[in-house]
Image (cartoon, rainbow, N blue to C red; front, top):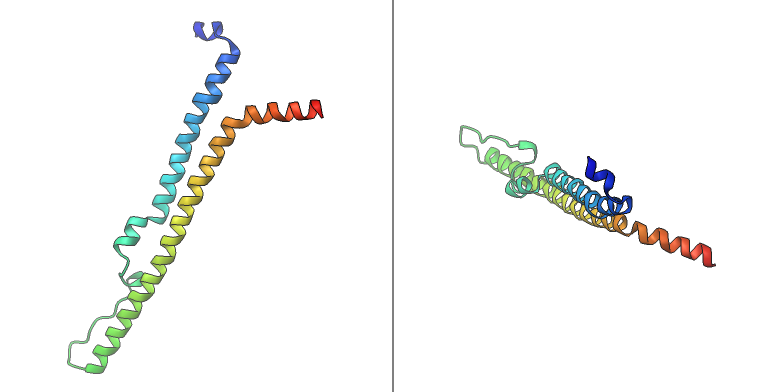
Length: 129
């Protein structure tokens, strides 16, 4: 605590603004990336891509009835096609959300680092115009 009082306040601000705060922002950004990855669960969607949608599957009849077998087969195929289409939509949405999160995080961190230059530039612009 004694060393903090002897340190220059400008040096402390530079240390906080350009080291500690970006480190904190990167940690927050990593949490958002992890959240989006878990929220859309892309590995699970890819692993179960052709599974029936919401586990809707029909059982084949016990006796031999070609019409019933055909109806159950077509119903199960449609359930898998619907599952694949819905999972494809969720995979695309998850990838778009992940890209949005990455770009937004980069912009926020870059803006944070450039705030002092922006403020100085605006002050110079307004004082000399």
